[in-house]
Amino acid sequence: MKFRMIVSTSRKMQTAVRHLSYLLLLISCISLFVSCQREPLEVYYVGKADVVINVDWMSKFGEKPSGMTVIFAKDGDDIVITDVTNAVDQYETMLEPGDYKMLIINHSFNEFGSIRFGQVKSFNKIYAFAQQQQRTTDFWDPNVAYMREPEHIGCVIDSFTILPEMTGGKPRFISYKDRNSIPTEFEGITLNETVEPMETEMTIRVRVLGIKYMSSVIGNISGMADGFLLTQAWRRSQAGYHLLESWKTSGITYEGGDTLKSVGYITTSIRTFGLPHGRELDSQRSESSNTLSLCFTLIDGTQHVFRYPVGKMIKYRTVEAESRRAGEESQEAGYFAKTDVTLELDLVVDAPFYDDDEVPNLPYAQPSGSGAFDAEVSPWGDDEIIDVPM
Image (cartoon, rainbow, N blue to C red; front, side, top):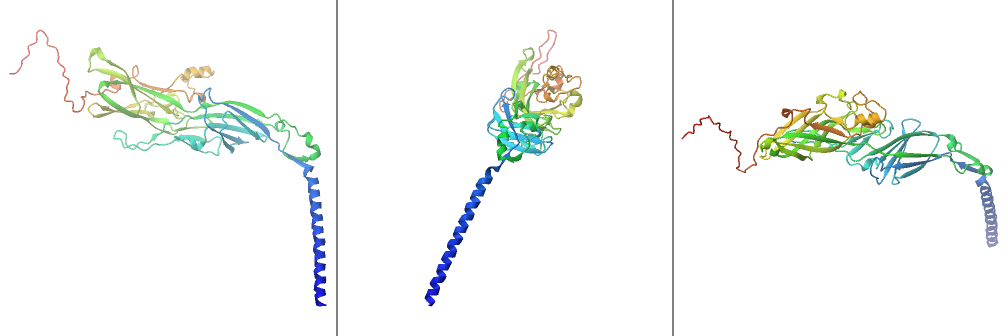
């Protein structure tokens, strides 16, 4: 009797489990059916416009980078998108309606060795500045920190507006039966941009008297801009030193055939950000705004230092012609265009601005350990009596 009760209980449990399984299966089928029926009832419409940016690197920048950084600020100053890409000829994206400001630079922020960047969250304030080299211990200019010459850096700066009609409407869910009302193609926007170089070159040429006695020369120049504002092109007002160490000699002549009176030129060129903002015009600079320092090592091993206040002598090359071409006033008229900041610079320490006593005049020297000497003998006159001691 007891055994039969156990068997009977077991059969009832099996029947209950079977009924429960059927119920669960039915619920699953209903859920699957309902979900299949509901999925196509609504679709999401993105509400963004296609943006295509064609980038010309060669016309002005002169080289095509391996990558670039594209930056957007939307409806204000805050940067909302920073995208690094290897597609440097054409960039495609989708943007919501709004007012956009755009910046493009070659490479990413971390790929520059001589340049660093600040205020990278603000479109209007983002800037680049030169890395510092190790401070010097040279006797002629101790404890001076030199700026590294900037690498080739270029920018595109532009602004545009995405209108709602470029996207077909606002982002939203719409009924599946109305899906055919969504436009398959929107107007979007296409931009054609040319990259502008943001650094420039400065050439320094110095007339040297007694140049035949020179073994080598090194120098520096103060008062040069340490960076620039990426989205404004203006140079920073902060200034620093550039090291001048790669000089070439040229045009060596001898006055009247006198081998003791040699004259020649030393010339060097450096890559630089130019002059600080607010000192572009001659009238904005004093002589002491920039100082050129030169340390000559002579053939006898001695060193001689010359310093020149040259703030008034640095000139932007062709600034007047470039300004006139743009229909603007010239530099001499007291106007300096933002587009002129990357014109090349010249500094010439020579006549007609400098007299012979205002250029480096190297003293007589003989090679160390040579034992050689030069003698100058004045000519005897016909009526002169010369006593020669015995």
